[in-house]
Amino acid sequence: MGGTGRTCPPPTPNLRPHPTLPPSPDAALIPPSHWQNREVFPSSPFSLPAPWISIFPPFFFFFSSPLPPLEGVCYFRAGWEDPSRISRRQRRGIAGYHRDPTGILRPSRLDQPRRGSLSCLPFPSPTLPLHRHPRASRQPPGTARSSAPPAMELLSTPKNIEINNITCDSFRISWAMEKGDLERVTHYFIDLNKKENKNSNKFKHRDVPTKLVAKAVPLPMTVRGHWFLSPRTEYSVAVQTAVKQSDGEYLVSGWSETVEFCTGDYAKEHLAQLQEKAELIAGRMLRFSVFYRNQHKEYFQHVRMHCGNVMKPSLKDNSGSHGSPTSGMLHGIFFSCNTEFNTGQPPQDSPYGRYRFQIPAQRLFNPNTNLYFADFYCMYTAYHYVVLVLAPKGSSGDLFCRERLPQLDISSNKFLTCCVEEGELVYRHAQDSILEVIYTEPVDLSLGVLGEISGHQLMSLSTANAKKDPSCKTCNISVGR
Image 1 (spheres, rainbow, N blue to C red):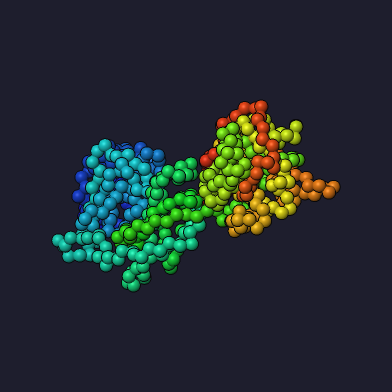
Image 2 (tube, rainbow, N blue to C red; image 1 turned 90 degrees about the vertical axis):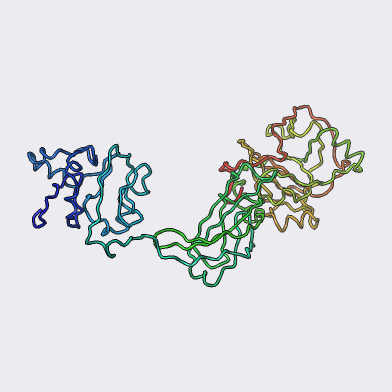
């Protein structure tokens, strides 16, 4: 080029100068074979040998203009430009470049392109070398240039971990740090692990560690997320503080001690959301007159011989939603009330046994009884179950439910009603849901009738310790399943 006294290679699509930087005198150090041989630097399928460029100059200038990126083709900046004058943002946008320990920009392997860079295949031949402009050096010759950031003081390890305000899908956490770290810390790292136990809900989450990253905020901070927190589940947690440095790397502290905690049950507002979903599919109301309970013959023999002919409440199992407050906490007796729409009578089939105890509805459900909504779930099937609780007013079961469950109006709700019509009590149940009614007090067998049914025992319909389908959009809400 004019004024330099050296001959530079003509600009080709392979080696076009940076639009804002002058060419470097070191370009003369590049042998002609590197820029005339297309196989050495295959940056564009339109590259032409030098003789063709001299014959067709208009054609050359057409293709020397910026070309759209082609799939599988890597476009580099000119090999002779000054790398030291390229900003960090520009360097991050150049596929296949890195700085070596002396600070010189070098071509990188292209097997694993950086995020945001072009996906390129490795070159089959040596790549074009880059040379740093000697005038760009800001240090005396012979001095090693280091890109490492200045050393920073280490962070102290967090201590005194405290966890409180635990719900089914959130908790609050705080810890102590050195005074000097409070202003430096920019991020928190939280290592959350689900503890393995035989009662864990394996249908909800995989037992994998969860690493959470949060920007530093005043402590205590709330951690919330139903996609990695399940109700009634034991977790272990540890924390780490970090400072994000100017080069994008993190200076981190050591991990704190590990603290264990257990998430809580559904709150009333969560159960209210389940209730709204259950009401959408409840269907019309059908009349019924009896509650019934199916069991094996041995069960009723045991009640008569060892329990004074009285069925006593037992602890509810873990069937249904994993966050239901009644699971493993409420004592009661399960009854059913669903009838066949064409006969108005209880079905002749049951998954729980061939012997059925029937009791008039008014013995268990009357104006002196409170009704509560407890759960809504399915077991990977098209039909859904609604769990209701009947508790005599003022009983221990009533006090338990009043604090934890939404109360229903016994004369006006979508599931189970007791109304006075023409001077007598009339009972109705939802047609499109299978109702599971828990009565919280003992029941004497003398108040009803015990007999054998003629149908089949459909064991596949049993809900004993059944787990809820976490993928069902009909009966799940946006909190822990």
